[in-house]
Length: 349
Figure 1 (cartoon, helix red, strand yellow):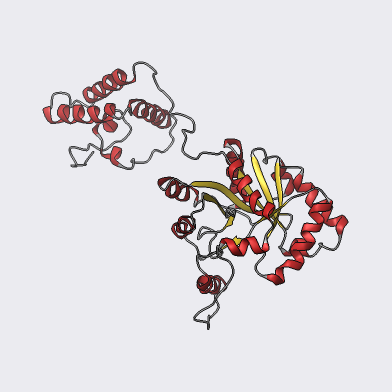
Figure 2: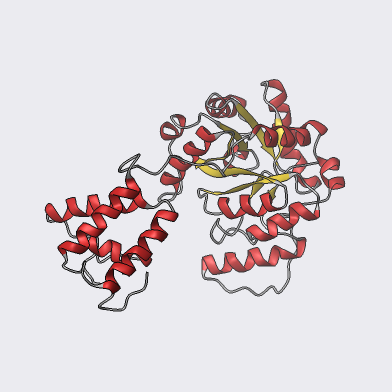
């Protein structure tokens, strides 16, 4: 079964008619083990995609399509290092359309790659074997897993595809099935035309349209792709062992052994300094907040924030009034994180 590897969702802004939810439904309807999300230059859709698939015991692969020296590459996180390299790359592509080769080559470890071969940049040099070979090689040497991606929409696409297959065979590369998926059903091609009209600020006369940028049935793929090209989608899929759900770093510790005691001590000292320690309402509120904070293991968090806010104030660095529930906290007030008395102004914790 062909694993979808080049799927753009709505996070490829105005370039797709497919939501993450619809993509997941495609995987479920076709009983596919999973698939890759491969938006253009961004990873915004990754968390929701992975989480939705995990709930249904399916596997999601983290990918991203980028443009390098006018060539399109689909990159896939094989492991944690590969994911971190994708994060670096997206920090560049989020501000500009293309990444330069020198920046890419320093951040390819842990990544698998597929070069898109039905793109104009490849088509323009497909009959110039020397130039094509030079360009393919400079990318292939960067990755431990590298394929030439072929997309076949119908019989008319075979001419280009067969040239790529011949080139791959004579230069020890492998071709892999890489259909571009932009919507759920053939009739959804009109959605793509609508977003394209929005992007180009143009009028759309058509009310319906059929296209090929959807996930086809198994019979279609077996007709146009070789057995190896389909099997390689499974090989790449199984090679991607990166797991999004894991702890990344850990919370700093202000005091490893005595954070709870230290927070209580500092809180009541602060209450005393503000001359509020003789008021039952304040003592009760402080005990109530501390019980919650300590039960959530947030003692180190409050101590750390109090420490850097104290430093900022001593150095005349402006500090905001706070945000979230902690801004209305009496603990925050007595630790001098905030300057507004939450009981006086009836603020909730």
